[in-house]
Length: 108
Image (cartoon, rainbow, N blue to C red; front, side, top):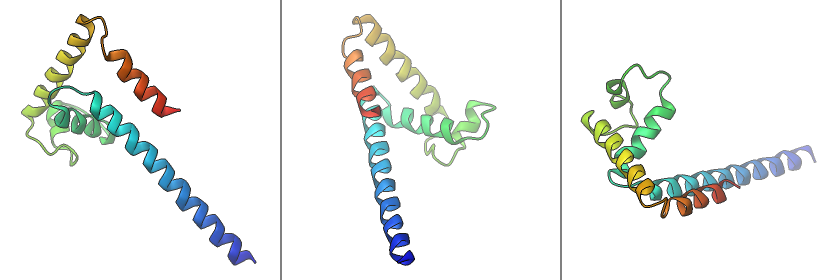
């Protein structure tokens, strides 16, 4: 009987893990879809920031295993991200609210 309970708990834990990973995957895809030019570099830069224990410089981010590009791509990614935000602001937030709503709806 105890073995059956343990097996049931393992199945529940695996199902929960799959559900959480699926939600994370959907969130990451929604975030990726919101990015403008150089979205691959921006996304890898975000992963590098999130997984690095410390960030003394941009060059150190480029040495992160999750950032597979040349260090100069960091500057291109940052420039691309800032121009996307500027374009969104200049158009009166056109599309920006839809993107934020899509991301926040996936959080709940």
